[in-house]
Length: 446
Image 1 (cartoon, rainbow, N blue to C red):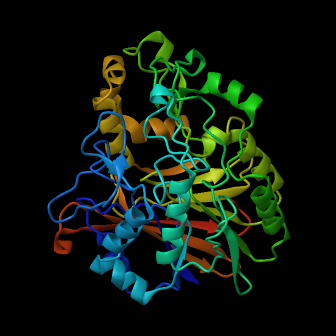
Image 2 (image 1 turned 30 degrees about the vertical axis):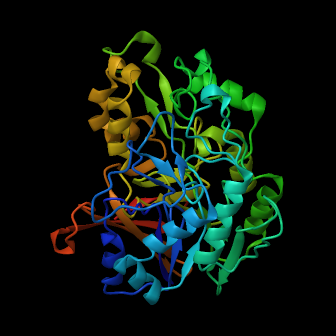
């Protein structure tokens, strides 16, 4: 079996060259797994979107996508979400890859709202008490997804969230592969640290901000708080379904379609004397992924620790990573599985988003973090050396997995160099290959 996995395809000012590269591969794939970010619900969101005259989404109704903005607009109605799917699906390269291959699709946040949890958005970071509780908007997003995405899942238009749709499901392919597709947005709890007030234990010193809340949080302070609150990402029912399904599977390879990153993404800033003393410490990069739900991550990975050949395939983070999985990343022993993370098809890469975030935040500028952004790959490698085997935070592209029966899986990261250039002829393709041999739970760079 050979399949592709992909995520994060922003239309605004960007071109789907990775899909054309997949179509032009000499060896075809059996199907494509799309791990979320099929659409982006906003246009002109300044920290990660750069619309052009030729590539811009038009949202007919819309709502502000942040405080004080007159340009950044987010989908709010069923008509808005339908319009976005129609515009995305007008792309010739996306059309062709759909024509060639069946898709297996789950959503992440942008099919509804950035960094969403349950039926809540996060654009305003609790400014003026705005919690963005929007169940009707959530239902509209789910209905449009069901109408436009080829997914064999039940949808009940008469039912209210969260009983209207269930997208978590399994697919079995012969003796060797069982695919477990999960939903990490519909049932998740709120992020542990509120965006509104300051919160010194996590270095949150600015009100109504993601810094110290969803991003760049002091690890020691956050870990203590998270252990007391134990938030869920999967919800109790889905979590038990996943654990039971993976444990009881007799497939050679149990492949988990996982929206947000599992491996612990810490950054150690202790070796940078130019930083103020309180910031020369260990931080989490982002808590919108599994690091923000680390108690449940440990529970799930401990429950799966004796499962043979657990493989997570992941999107969301706009970078290529390969890592080995541990129930406790602070005290890793032998790995219990592996994770391969694909970069976005087009979305602004992780390092460039970080650069934009730092350059627009007076606190981060004052701390001198701008100078560290170009060093991000090296910082991630050194901090997480016990389990991280590959880092590329400037990438766009798609991943391909070859399942070689009982023997091994091999993964190729297929990288394109310039998604803002409309010319496919201007693209250079780069390949990085990995192998996980059956029974090892190790990532080998080929």
